[in-house]
Length: 120
Length: 110
Image 1 (cartoon, each protein chain N blue to C red):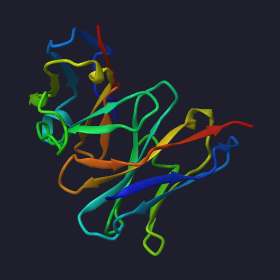
Image 2 (image 1 turned 135 degrees about the horizontal axis):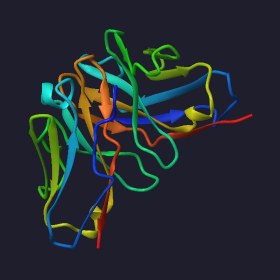
Image 3 (image 1 turned 30 degrees about the vertical axis):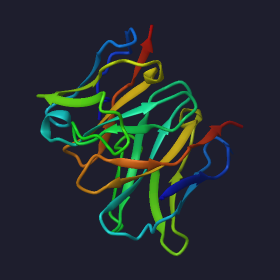
Image 4 (image 1 turned 180 degrees about the vertical axis):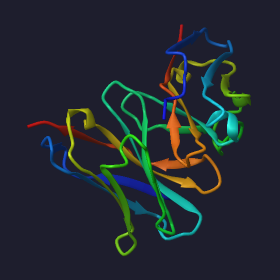
């Protein structure tokens, strides 16, 4: 059974870079036909799509975050990563990783999420 | 890209049916059938309930159904149960090869 687990610092200072990792177990991140993505949810608010990466390495990002976001994959570690630069308090959120079947809107499974707070 | 429009809240009594709407544009909901719905209980990760407008993943109750007309997708929960009380989000692919969520709907079973 495929499982995803997010990890990273729970506290990041303003203007610094947020870096998170999503470890995939029970399956390979190299399998063709899947997108691996990040979604976030500020406390008490709705979901926001951040971006995704295809098995070919092709990426798509939310236009509102595109200048600050990088999503990559480390196949040797079976991990997905997220880097968000120049963070502010508005980037405080629970960050989720998820897998989506290519050619569908089926995103499943999701990780349990990790809370990142931006504060000095 | 603008968030899809959902009602902030919908309520119903046990056994009743409710419908949640998700309104977008011809550049997202109206342009293809890549619309999904997620259920989220407090403190939990979202759970996929419907994908590609009307498909139910294995294990999801057949009380859950989805549909679409023009730029509006809908999620219907029939035979409402207490366990259905949660937040629901729609999610659509866009013509810019990105994805957008709705603002979320809180379902209350009264």
